[in-house]
Picture 1 (tube, helix red, strand yellow):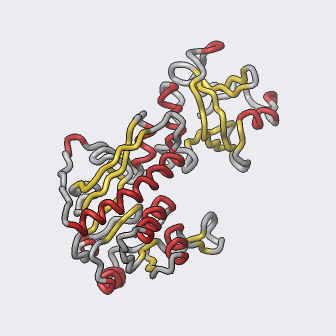
Picture 2 (cartoon, one colour):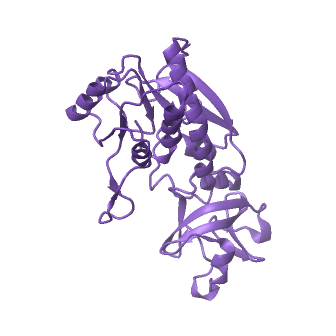
Picture 3 (cartoon, rainbow, N blue to C red):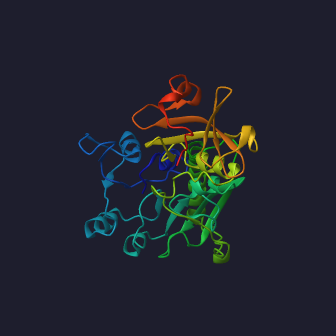
Length: 310
């Protein structure tokens, strides 16, 4: 059971495994327009992969429906593997005779929640990882089966890290299935005292707070790139910021947090303790571009002075 690209490597690795795992059913979200509501509905990455592999597919956006639980029961699963799907009710995950487990993109109990990849980067972690655990009613709290550490590189953003975690996760899913099949699972209970949260990303908690320290701002921006992206407003228009770097402590004067400085062909913004350089951005209605390209078309006299991002 899974929907986004993150889950695809796990599905492919299960099918390709020499152990001969029989994927009797693939469950994914229903087809949806990719961008605008009037666009043609598009299949999820998992559905596309499943059909390519010749597997049976069931689509649902309502895991609590009787029709869904009936479809899962009819498949008579020994194991249910969940990777980036919806929250399952007990009447569904208990249908698996040998258990249902989830692939989670953190070292649980750290970063329980909907956005573990993003929040690990935002919080400045240098190591993260993946976990498989048996499902239980409280979300992300089940008994741990296997974990694997993955370094969080300085150049990582949410997109690149999710890609690496999905590949490592595919290997861990297969190892977990092998452990269940052989009866060699050694469970470890989560210590709730060590838990941290990775809440869902919203319009509000992805907005850039320019009074934050510059190092925190850089982590925040890369932790949300490329999607949904950290955002601010530029002269009344939304601006997404995808890449930024620390640019010194109060270089060329400082100023109110959010103050823009075009300095030596660079786009600098005042932070809580200095300056950051914006390297890649997207102004509302425009394409993604490097800051240098943006500045070539920037006419400073058309904007109020001083120009402040908010």
